[in-house]
Length: 67
Image 1 (tube, rainbow, N blue to C red):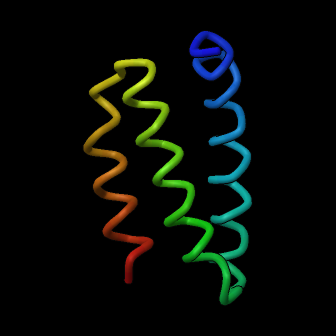
Image 2: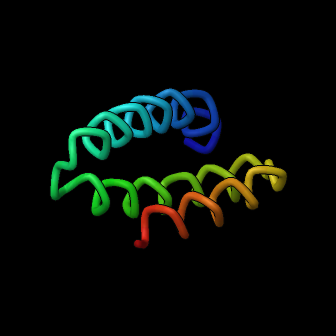
Protein backbone atom coordinates (compact mmCIF):
# COMPACT_ATOMS: atom_id res chain seq x y z
CA UNK A 1 0.00 0.00 0.00
CA UNK A 2 2.83 2.39 0.87
CA UNK A 3 4.49 1.74 -2.49
CA UNK A 4 1.24 2.52 -4.33
CA UNK A 5 0.98 5.82 -2.44
CA UNK A 6 4.60 6.63 -3.22
CA UNK A 7 4.00 5.94 -6.91
CA UNK A 8 0.65 7.62 -7.48
CA UNK A 9 0.15 10.27 -4.78
CA UNK A 10 2.60 12.71 -6.44
CA UNK A 11 0.48 12.66 -9.60
CA UNK A 12 -2.67 13.34 -7.59
CA UNK A 13 -0.88 16.14 -5.75
CA UNK A 14 0.26 17.63 -9.04
CA UNK A 15 -3.31 17.65 -10.37
CA UNK A 16 -4.79 19.13 -7.20
CA UNK A 17 -2.07 21.80 -7.04
CA UNK A 18 -2.65 22.89 -10.64
CA UNK A 19 -6.44 22.90 -10.16
CA UNK A 20 -6.14 24.88 -6.91
CA UNK A 21 -3.87 27.39 -8.62
CA UNK A 22 -6.39 27.87 -11.44
CA UNK A 23 -9.18 28.34 -8.90
CA UNK A 24 -7.09 30.85 -6.94
CA UNK A 25 -6.31 32.75 -10.13
CA UNK A 26 -10.00 33.20 -10.77
CA UNK A 27 -10.66 34.13 -7.11
CA UNK A 28 -12.86 31.11 -6.49
CA UNK A 29 -13.89 31.08 -2.81
CA UNK A 30 -13.06 27.38 -2.34
CA UNK A 31 -9.51 27.64 -3.73
CA UNK A 32 -7.87 28.27 -0.37
CA UNK A 33 -9.72 25.43 1.34
CA UNK A 34 -8.60 23.07 -1.40
CA UNK A 35 -5.08 24.42 -0.99
CA UNK A 36 -5.06 23.70 2.72
CA UNK A 37 -6.35 20.17 2.19
CA UNK A 38 -3.74 19.67 -0.51
CA UNK A 39 -1.00 20.64 1.93
CA UNK A 40 -2.13 17.86 4.28
CA UNK A 41 -1.77 15.41 1.37
CA UNK A 42 1.69 16.82 0.54
CA UNK A 43 2.75 16.30 4.15
CA UNK A 44 1.45 12.73 4.03
CA UNK A 45 3.47 12.03 0.90
CA UNK A 46 6.60 13.63 2.38
CA UNK A 47 6.39 11.41 5.44
CA UNK A 48 5.64 8.21 3.49
CA UNK A 49 8.35 8.80 0.90
CA UNK A 50 10.82 10.37 3.34
CA UNK A 51 11.42 13.22 0.89
CA UNK A 52 12.27 15.70 3.63
CA UNK A 53 13.43 18.37 1.18
CA UNK A 54 9.78 19.12 0.39
CA UNK A 55 9.09 20.32 3.95
CA UNK A 56 10.05 23.96 3.13
CA UNK A 57 7.71 23.85 0.12
CA UNK A 58 4.85 22.62 2.26
CA UNK A 59 5.47 25.26 4.91
CA UNK A 60 5.63 28.01 2.28
CA UNK A 61 2.47 26.87 0.51
CA UNK A 62 0.70 26.52 3.86
CA UNK A 63 1.54 30.15 4.66
CA UNK A 64 0.38 31.32 1.22
CA UNK A 65 -2.87 29.32 1.24
CA UNK A 66 -3.61 30.24 4.86
CA UNK A 67 -4.12 33.91 4.09
